[in-house]
Image 1 (tube, one colour):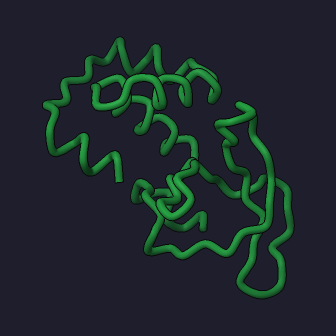
Image 2 (cartoon, helix red, strand yellow):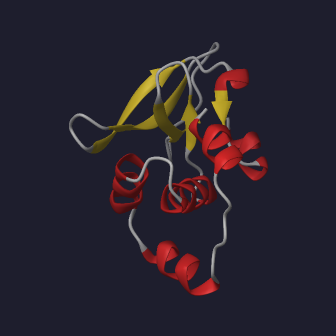
Length: 113
């Protein structure tokens, strides 16, 4: 949701050196940049790098999710996802049933669901 809204309003000019620096940042800093630079090019760069790392924005719950590494798929529609808990500022795991139509992701992440 934010990605579409922001992209429609801002011209994005990313230099190679800026993106090289962003790629070295940890996930925590990328989430901080995302939540504290709303409507800016910095937020778009954080979105791009989070998506490159396999994170997807789940619109109904307004959270970032990724497939939990090393977890076996569950039986039925549920699977284990890692999500970023903004309140406690940490990654956590939980079983979720994801509606793919309500996930913002880059093209190379769509097969990770």
